[in-house]
Image (cartoon, rainbow, N blue to C red; front, top):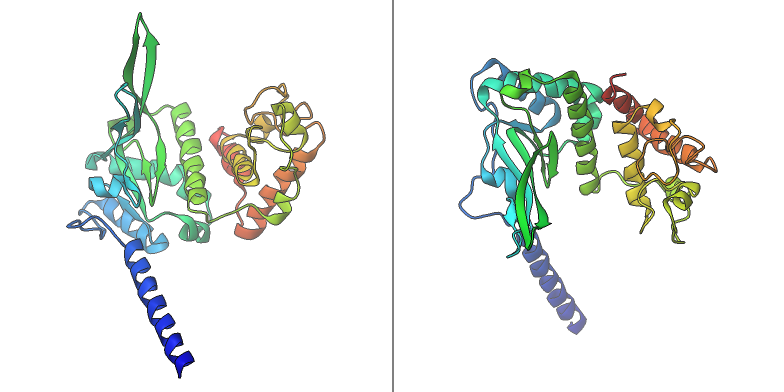
Length: 313
């Protein structure tokens, strides 16, 4: 009886702890509606947005709140002044102009949706794609003249990954003024951010075959040493996850011609990683094929085809 009684106490305590943990994980800001609904209007493009939701379960929102854009479980992620020295950081966004959404959706379809098998997008798209008229990287530069002063700077970027959403730019009049080069840069950036978002959520991890195909146990004195071991990410504090992501980045943002170009092995960019100048032992090519074939065989997705397209090929 005593054993039974103790067991019941243990089960009761466990249930209480589990209940508290679940509630804590579900916490959201009070008095904020966190539900999303499409369509958000009655324009012809709203049906396109509804179709995307029906296909992938993802909301494309051109009307959204600060909560939609900036809230995360660890806090609000508005651009902030970090310290008394005047250092800024963060991403500033604004909702798309409804008059530009049709053209923006066409740009996104050509640069993103059309490049993937539908099952892949259904499995890996985040909850929200925020259609923006502004996605600005906020950062600081400092100068000594004669004392140290800081300046807040703003840089327009095409897309950015943030918790359960991706910000996508060009939801304004500039979408109709983009040059061919800007469209290619948009394609490369949006697809890079998509895979960054996937990685941040821990959804696709390095395979065991990839992990054991390089030596991460010993440090690398230089980038050239790392290349010789098949490591293409930064040679400082390298690991399988960052390296896996670097191989993906190379494929979705660079063409095969870029990757096969001869570039000095002191160069830390991903350009030229398949050329013997950097790939001195042929290990990079083998690991590149491991990653590329994994996506082809598992998801019917050739990452390199995206990179070729991002370079106009």
